[in-house]
Length: 70
Image 1 (cartoon, helix red, strand yellow):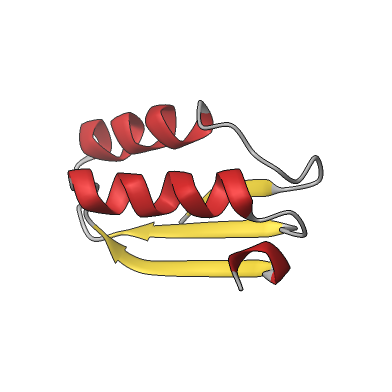
Image 2: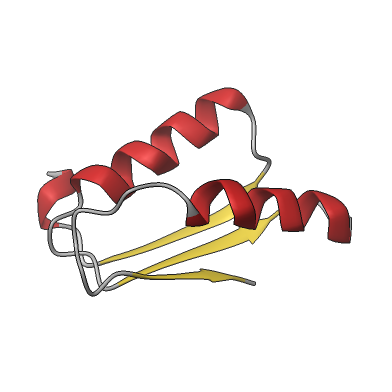
C-alpha cells in the first residue's frame, strides 16, 4: 500500500524514534510519492530544524518526491 501513495500529510509530527522510522519507511518505499508534508507539533525553531535535517537525509524511492515542512 505504501508503494502506491502519491501524497502524505502528517499532522502533529513530534519526531519520536518511532515516528522517524515510519517517516523514513514511507520515503524509502513510496515509489509514486510526489509530496510529503510534515506539520510538526513543536513550535521550537531548533526542533523543527532538526526534524528537517533528519528527514531530508532519508533516502527516497521516488525521484520526484518533494518534502515540505509547515
